[in-house]
View 1: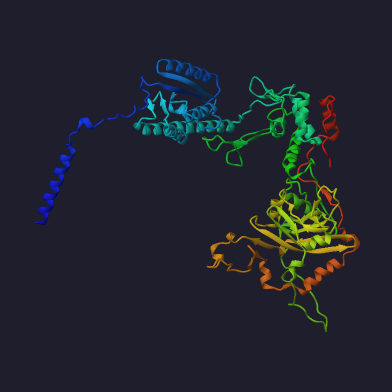
View 2: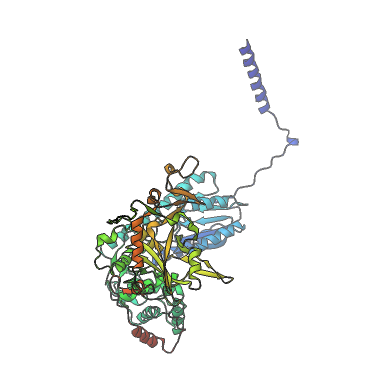
Length: 634
């Protein structure tokens, strides 16, 4: 019964709805207002302001023909539509469509649309408009959202962006255009690899050279002196800015014919290995075909180096010397080839001087320099850790106390705040206030390292010393610690000591002093590491985030890690400690030699750089009376 009532009620509702839908209109009380006619490419009775966009991707002669034909075609195209007014033909020649960068014509056209000066854009096809899906679809939608909307008509595909059914086809064609660009990029990459694999490097136009009939580089006698002058002036000591000013004054031209030289253009000359006869391929590569941004090749792509590929304007040794100078210019170094010196005797025997502004010396060279004063030291001994326990024998006389098993407590556990320390980290070195107060006015120091004994040392130095650095700053007649930049040698030092670059390290040192000579020596074996907690694995932290293993302890915002052996002993065994003191006490005045100048250690293959007088004579001849300001020589 209930179901029957529901069925009848539903039928009544349906009848009411039908009657309501069959309502009659009272023509005296009704008016119909039609919609505005939407802009459509196919309309010829609506006035429309038209912009034409044409683009070719290269500046090849054939592409120029296509470029001019497109412009002429669309000029006639607009004339066949009497209600169209041509605003302008916007064009980009020799520009890729995968990015909006450098597409000045395209960007000007879009700007005109946004200020209401264009109603419709005509373009040959989707690939001419953009070869990037995001750019193509995004711009079309932005134009459609303007008030009034701006449509884009792609003639070849017969697609008008303001039509509701255009989006799917437009998205598909934009994707195809982008993929076509990607395919071409892969094809060019394959072609380049085939050239390199077959010994055919690219040798584009270069200042100082021309190409012979076989496409090989040969020296251009009119341009080569400009290249040689730039190298010789830099070797002589002139800055890149001074070289640029000199070339401008001489009226020398670049390979593009420009006479407005800059420091950047000089560096480009000095960095190009082809000037010494070599060819180094794939120094840069383009990882993304969309933005075409070149990146320095650090092993991501194969490389080849061709030595003596052609005749060089300068020697390879001069080129190598200039590269080292350029590499270290950012650290303030002005020397052509800094010397690596090692101290041959005394307490600092085996210590090698550190040039704070030179990044060229690596671990092997420091080891080689230190080992040179230990003639009987073999390779195995040099690489062995110095922290191993020494074998020793002793005899205890009758009535003497036998102190075997007793230890001299480590001073690091007591009053460490007043001990001389040095902290390494963040490309900087900083010494404690104790060191600063002791050195006082002698705030120029020399840094030294002994990679074999894994020790670091400092000693006072004359401010004219090429390796000298300032250890402190003065305020109100008081000296305070300052950060010493170690950017040039920090990575090498960390590698020598076997340290983790994510950590800071602090070492407590010992003062050696006699008469007016002094030095601080820091033993790396007893260094403490300071690091952030995120370096630890989750197993090393308790549930509350605290350190759960030893020998790690909280130290401010960092965690302090001490050598593991410290947790199992109070210090050095008594008799070993006495032996180490005896060595120092038995040193005579000759053995101390704290200020002994290090002897020169020759690293690697000797470079025969052009002599000073030869550089001077050539520069003088080329300048022809023009005298640029001399560079400062240290």
